[in-house]
Length: 375
Image (cartoon, rainbow, N blue to C red):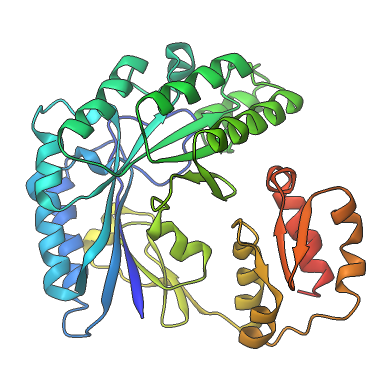
């Protein structure tokens, strides 16, 4: 079994207004943290675990020096069986590229895929998100990545940003396409409680957010434009050119195993889920598995349904029954009829998948499917 390995680098230069991922702005413990990452990697030595995807997430892992990334990858090679054709991704923020040689250093260290946090090619929208880079800098980052030899480049884009219009969002999409990216991750802005946006919203501040109808138009505009330009809509929030799907993230969506290392990192390994504490200090002290729990068969069945329905391939009901013992009743098709009539679902060959419209309303639709399956 080939597994994925996720490395969490929590340090950032500053916190974005919308971000609720675990991150810290004090980078004074960065070198100590990298040593602790290597310590945890080394704990797997001798177990003969095969890895075919490695993902550096954050935080802002592109703040690391090339030699630090190389050191971590070398440690992975010593402690795991890292396959030659492995996908090795690094999340990159345009503001972290002050060193002209950094992209080449990452390439030489072994990174072969970049996930660039662009979010928008509109300066007003970037300012609203407190991103720290300009549209021009985002464009330049992608161009420089190509020159450094990267041919597998993904960009993160957002819709529902304060003051964003359908027109400005379309311009962002077209700019990304003009830069020949291979993959687009598209996320609706979500206002989370402890973020800058969340605090402002609680105080009654008008954030200038687009309304629901505009969000809907933005989403379907993106689907149409990306499909016309050769992108496959393979997961709710992800679009890829042929052979450029995110192999690492597909492990999450296909209920495959992965190991997470670093503060707040989660793992699904040997049928057990666990995580590290969201504390750099606790990680440095050597705290290991926390929130450990073994998935019951019912838990695994629920996850399989939820995650499968995020993918365009959908949910194979035969596989659900064979792997997890979930008996699909004969009246299943009758029960999903209202969802089929609303064109939220597709159903054929005992496989159910969400339509484009269903993707947009996925949370509600998936809950209904789980209820129909008595999960």
